[in-house]
Amino acid sequence: MTKTLSGPDWCSKYPTSKLLTDLLPAFHAKVDPFITALINAGAKVHIAATYRPVERAFLMHYAWMIGHAGMDPVAVPAMKGLDIEWVHPDIAASKAAALAMVQGYGMAYVAALVSRHTQRRAIDMSISWENELVIKDAAGKDHTITSLPRTGMNPDLWTVGASFGVIKLRTDPPHWSDDGH
Image (cartoon, rainbow, N blue to C red):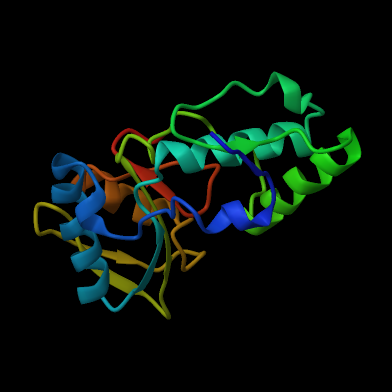
């Protein structure tokens, strides 16, 4: 098998989905009515990611490890079916290619090899609204959110999301999942 050198061209392969239908059916059944409630209340919702293919997680993880954590590219394990060559003519070129991938992916942190995204149990979405938000929870009860911020980082909104079974990861602004991880 001929391998292709690592670098930014890999970033367009194995794209992350933005489709709710790519979530596990049980989680999709929770996310869909939460998003509907947000939209019905006048919030703006932008979905950035749902399912992340394991190949993409692998590429992101090891690009970070080589580029930022100083991992020797020779030590990257092979992934069946993925024909990437991490080892360039010298370590500086290997690191530069990995950093170009990190930039291409728009990464701020190391990607987990296995995550709620690879398990189809998470969604990254930006949420915003103006003024107050009057939103129905899963039981149909109205909640008026007047507190700040008027984004997905609002703890009062987290309570509403939790009523649907969509739990906020407090340390990651766009990330919601079935268990808060």
